[in-house]
Image (cartoon, rainbow, N blue to C red; front, side, top):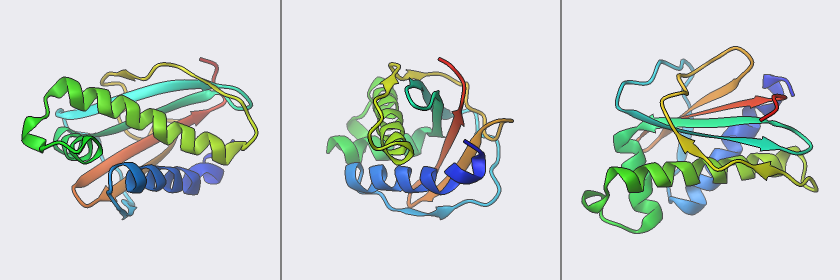
Length: 149
């Protein structure tokens, strides 16, 4: 699936999940993506079904903490790093699910368990990438379709 076909789907899927699960509005796309700073957290997962590929998300530690606090209904000061990392994995899972429904509403997909790691560094060849402006920071979402997990 060419990147041009999925750009809008990435934004729509992320906005749907962030608004419904974290009460966070996507304020728009950021036209020029930059490399994430060292304090950024990332999560990724693989999917296989009618389409196969990988989805990755990345955001600053403070943005992840803010989203996790909203999602969990917790005070941001009470969150620890393991909770934020676990939330980021779940966020990648929810965004991927929202995207896959847009690809094929009747398709059955297998998703890997999301993992954390410093793998997602912004635009890469073969990836459709979006940088989304949130009220509390930025969220990068990358999608590569057509690879086998």
